[in-house]
Image (cartoon, rainbow, N blue to C red; front, side, top):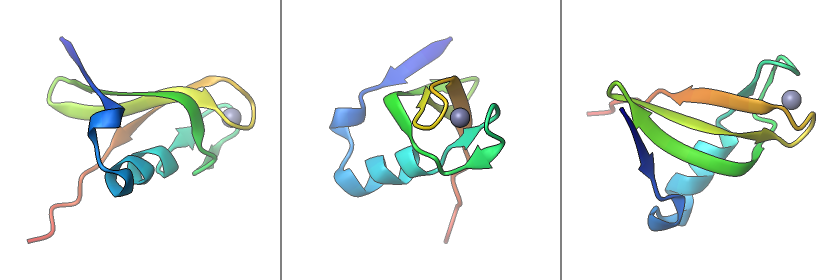
Amino acid sequence: MKQIIDLSSLDEIERSLYLDDTWCENCSEADLGIGRPELYIENNRKFISGSCNVCGELCTSEIITKNIT
Ligand SMILES: [Zn+2]
């Protein structure tokens, strides 16, 4: 089951963190940024997907949350 998270409900720092931390398989490059982003949770994992700012392909990245305690 896919649970969509409203990106506009996040604060700006958190949002830019997700949007900057992307990987495009088509470009084989990280941190290119994405357009029309969608943040969702599936199987207890968090993903961000959107169209690559460089090639326009849909890219989906899993968000690895670092647990700093
Ligand atoms: Zn790309």
